[in-house]
Image (cartoon, rainbow, N blue to C red; front, side, top):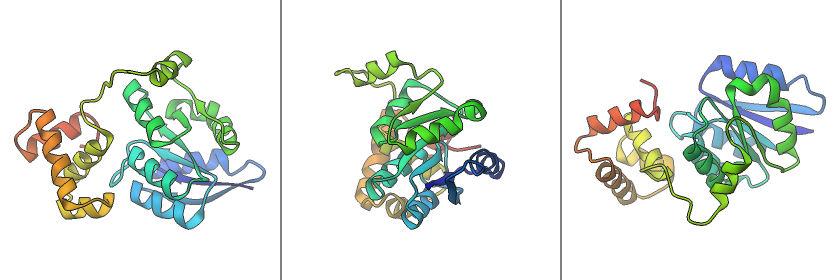
Length: 210
């Protein structure tokens, strides 16, 4: 039996994914989650084989949720499910420990194959994630495209969602001082001097929904 967890903040997407997957013999949907923290908690509770995880989740984004799931439920493979496929995003997915990457536009054609492949602990990628891109990522000295680190992006997202520094520290399981360090570093890198400007950056770069 292949146990599957679905995490997306849109009900209609979760329903669509469930309808595609639950008809497969030997597959069981063990839970659904609507934000990244909920996804981590459900993964700990249900111990799925495969997690279908939206990249743009609230509270914890898909990268941070992937990192925590892979660390705490190492038997679970993560399939990142997204509308975007930039090289930066793919690099972050791989670094966080996900083995699969699927565009939402490709779901009807490839979702079953993606879950089937990940259930055997093999990688699955579609979209513009070509072999050349993977080779570039794996090559030493690959330049980074993103100004912010993935942890800084998580902190910026949570600030934009209105979370206090203490709440961010609790959510990411880091110290208050570390949150303040990431926040200051992000603002310095982005040349911003107000929280409002940081929130506008987060909205403009789709870290949160407007």
